[in-house]
Length: 128
Image (cartoon, rainbow, N blue to C red; front, side, top):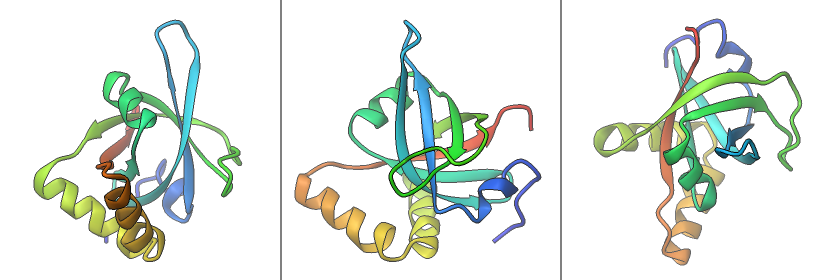
């Protein structure tokens, strides 16, 4: 694992973050997600409505969050990129190593039972 850059150091030890995107009319849409950081990028996994918003509006605000998704810090601007193939498998492994119970077992099992395929995203802070 590589050392996080300055901006992402704030999220390196965080268990959860809140991602907020904005609809075209300005309505904020938030979701919480587990996060892991590698160097100058971070990985998150989302599903459902959050996935749709991230695909359409890749500019997000990211902030550390409590278990319930309540923001616990100052937001930072980031850009998301949907991962696929080998990158997606690498991100899933990184998340499973940091969050073995939730991301290694519960989330994949729940997604399989719901027949929903979660999406993995790479986050990079704007301006870095």
